[in-house]
Length: 640
Image (tube, rainbow, N blue to C red; front, top):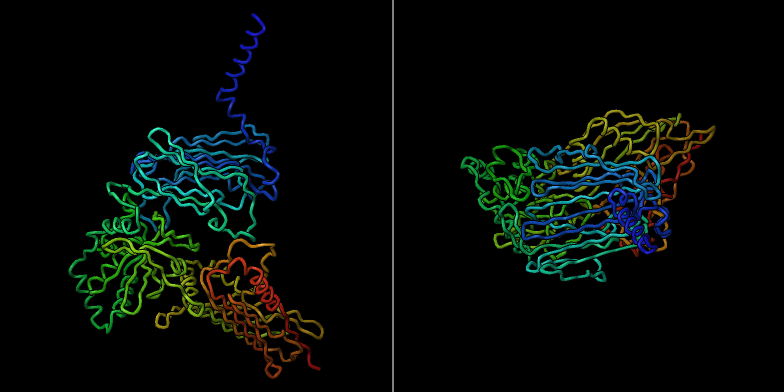
């Protein structure tokens, strides 16, 4: 055999070895040494790749493949080893694969079928639900290591297409891409949060391919960028014009047509037995105006119904009819909202369902880009001089209160003519108030005996109502322990009171703080600010890129009257403090009364939902002054 022939044979054998699947899986680009040093700074994990491929077959069928790989450096990054894949009867999951690679990129473990746990994705408030989860956890004992997952989705019937976020967390990203393929006869609509980011579009036969990609994204700081990816990442949303789910054809080319599709799903769902119609008309007979009728029927809904998730087939979209809700006494947000609209219609009041993206984070509503982004339904009742909004899943809200998770955001009102973009109301700080009045008796031992009364209104009331309604006695005690800033807490009696007439909640509490003060031979030191004081200042940064966000504007008012032990008189109290910024104000005032008692007053107001990034340094100074005021001490001295 000639030298050339031998060389060809060697090269050919090397080629066969190199393409052997078993061998190939051991050789990857996951060697940790390949990661740029720019991505390694302060890294708990680095996303090596996140690839989403989405292929549209027709207006009801699609296929996607997701591949992720994350290098994990320490315990804080171990959550990336876990994967949850949701699915239902419209989405089938196939070909799940997983591997672990060591720091050198060598394969050390492959996913076994027994590692995949299939569970129902049903909350405690669900009784009928087809949603399920495939849960996987692949862990390795030696850091750093890399976890790679891949799986495929077959979709039959869709309303919502995937969203691509190039940096979903603050962690560094080596490479991420989004590949969308669609038949040429179908239209792909897309929206990108960054105007400068454009897809690469390629015509491939009778299909068009769109590709977005990002690479080399450094780890971000929460103090600089916040924790909402919409404030720092590139976000790409895609949507169809025409779609079909469970034989229900729809048009998403405009908010009007999308709303019309949902309205048509609800047709015929507004029937009630005659006895119910007679009952509610009799109930509202004494009402002197439409508002009183709305209040009566809202209380009727709350008294007789509860929220239960019902997610079957197109039931994820189509509500159960009003008669079903009446007979069973429960429904999900869609069913309860439809029921409320039906009740109002039977007494001559026109109301509409509203689809909304509910949650603490206010995601961008893109008016020029109709797409499915909603997860909740509420009710809008237009009035001659005002509009009433109703959260129908709550048994504790007052009429007109929709809660911080629904307020101050755009939504889609469903009318017979189609969808109409509306904005839910904002709340003012003087609507969301917490008032605490405390009588505090100081003992010469340093103990402090407290009798506190707390009152909440608006969103502060709604938040505490939701908590108290489901909290265990132990959770209540844990919550009480967070109200004060000192150790040595002994909890006495406590009682929660719901005042429906005044639309407030109250809480009476008796506690003792052991050795709250520090008695010396001649002097006694203690901190007048007792309840939930500010303990830390936001981190100083060169430049802030995202706003500081609040769930709602609010006011907190504290009044504490301290009774001084007989053997002491007041020597020193904290200076009065007054701080005023465009986004809020704070003051604290300490008054000595006849050397026998001290009156401490504290007021904190945040008057908006966001503080722009350019005002971050002012916000930081604001908090600095509050922390200093809250830490200030009073001094008592023994009588001669």
